Length: 410
Image (cartoon, rainbow, N blue to C red; front, side):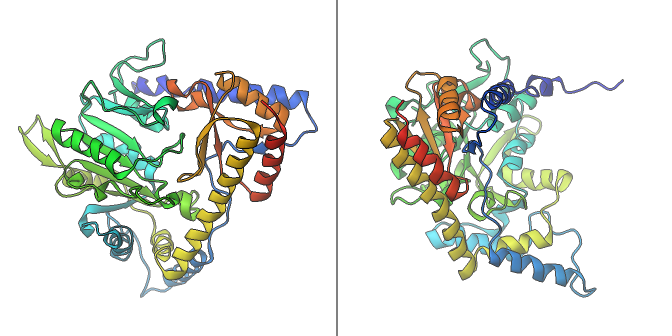
């Protein structure tokens, strides 16, 4: 009988999700005629944009002709999309980027969870807390997390605790990790870093020879000046940072699955096997060749359309729609007297429980306002005492939720 990777057994049972389902079921039984509003999801609700649909239809027709048919595409992605990414996302901001440093993929979650394939399991990981749990769970199954302790911390992970008192910006590590996961704009807290704050992290990484894995999934939602859209806006970040990007949230690609990862030529790791430094760009290329195919030609043409004049205009309309939702939610939370962060440069709002209990605020929002939120425990040990509200919802539903929130006094 084949032996299994038992690490998966350590993360396969999501106790928080099970608890949510149990409590929603109880509250639904007690209130059978009440329709609740879902503000718990990170999935988008707006349909695909016209520029995307037109690009997909055009490429489908191309694929029907012998002369234009495309089978398996290049491992790193088609040059037409990579060139659009380099020009539209980096050169337009004055950032140096080479086409061979961009790898088109099925999205951020896949690449964040897979980047460990090219990194030794003996590396010590540093993660923000609270944080999206894929960062933790991918390292559990990759044998880097150690043992789960009673306080829900993994013994071999350095937790970079982000507290309300410090604006959910963690201090630099006192205990050096080999790799640090950063995510800004942040899910779940909705906060961002300024240029100087991100520069501190880059300088720390350079001085301590730490690899930074920077998730910029929500950069399109940044509205304030002085907030970096890419870690490569910081001097010398190319030496120590890998960046992950996605079209899922800004362009509604959660069902199409397309994004990209940037690995500059300068980023290196050390090989015990060869006793020398190794370029991570080369290793990731090798990994993708062995394990992955880039998204289909049709999907990549759809992504390319996002960089057209019409596509950019439509992406902005999408972002404005969701951030209008966030603005309405913030006003309603103010009226209700609740403390929160986020909702300015990110589509998430991190709400503090008046009772210091995530579950009590979760139940109160559900039973009194018929709003479903995400309890903070879903995002790690430091999430206790908070819930996350998502602006990725139908605007009419958000308006209704806001009217209920504003009238309820916690």
